[in-house]
Amino acid sequence: MFAIDKLAITGGKPVRKKLLKYGGQWIEKDDIRAVMNILKSDFLTTGPSVAEFEQMLAEYVGAPYAVAFSSGTAALHAACCMAGIGPGDEVITTSLTFAASANCILYCGASPVFADIDENTYNIDPASIESKITNKTKAILPVHFAGQPVDLSAIMDIAARHGLIVIEDAAHALGAEYGSQKIGSGGNMACFSFHPVKHITTGEGGAVTTHDAALYEKLVQFRSHGIIRDPGSLTLQSGAWYHEMQFLGYNYRLTDFQAALGISQFRKVDRFLGLRREYAALYTEAFKDMRELSLPSQSPASLSSWHLYTIRLNTRCLNADRREIYDALWKENIGVNVHYLPVYLHPYYKQLGYETGLCPKAEQLYEELLTLPLFPRMSRKDVNDVITALKKVLHYYSKL
Ligand SMILES: *Cc1c(COP(=O)(O)O)cnc(C)c1O
Image 1 (cartoon, rainbow, N blue to C red):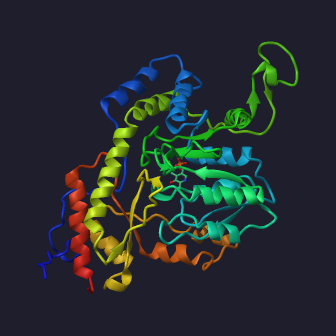
Image 2 (image 1 turned 90 degrees about the vertical axis):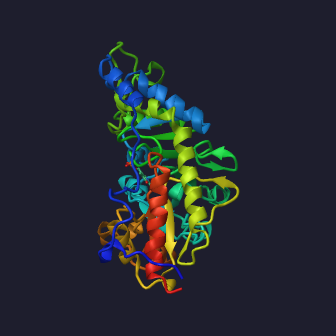
Image 3 (image 1 turned 135 degrees about the vertical axis):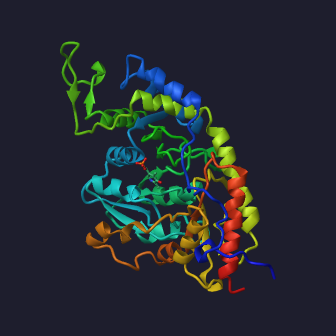
């Protein structure tokens, strides 16, 4: 038996005085200097910093092309639209993801079809994808949940057999590896996000990486209203002022001061990833024998970028549900979070006709999931506070 400290939620002393958030950026002096330099330069937007940032991303993931966008959501929209997804098409995506992974399908006038998850990895289950294919299916949009790569070879195999496009939502997966290749280096379009909780940040921002030169040109054009200036691609030869809008695009450009922040942040990507991996390993070591929870299994063939550290509560062993555990941890000043409500359970999606029960494994998992704080700027002391608080709370509510 061990003595159980009184929980903060019942009037005891919290494990820490100051709230620890679940994620956040790390901006240093050099990042600020990089942004200031651009603010004093000639180009706030459409200048050289964007191309430099794109080059860094392409080299890092090992793809020939990268196109920067104003957000990860804009990148997903561009990828779907330039893949030719449109009204009448179905696109299969995972149920356990942020709304953006499915919203981008709706933006194109197509229908998201939600596949269930694999209970071991929490990633989209290839068998569920296969079962949802119809003659309207046009693409598969898998998400590397929490930074753990999906089973890409199984998904590519399904796509090849049915003639489908694959668009990866790699918002969690900068630096993740699948079969010793970085995510984003494959033959598909992969979409990244540079929101402050992601691996590196540009404030808001995103990008698509691709191997396809024609798609690359289209993505650049889509980012600026569908307008083109390159004389070789114009339908009419006219004066030097002449440009053409050839299809309906958007203004989805990243600014140069954001790109400058991205360039400065990119220099630290391996340090940031190393810290995420180190902290994740400390959590795993601390929790691996606790029967009150389980951890997503990690495939030996891949390397997670650890965007999120999620635990699954084993509610059979607890006298409390996820909500009580969540509230108790917040009172200990540990800002746990929940990722994600299955997308189709949002009121907007329900109103479109999606119903509870569609993906039972994702729905069950959602009831039991918690995301622990994990970001490079936290200290080892912060990691220990999370471990102490989680053990304190789970031991208090444990039936074992
Ligand atoms: C962050 C995120 C995105 C993109 O979000 P933006 O905030 O638009 O950059 C897309 N999909 C997932 C799974 C995400 O976590």
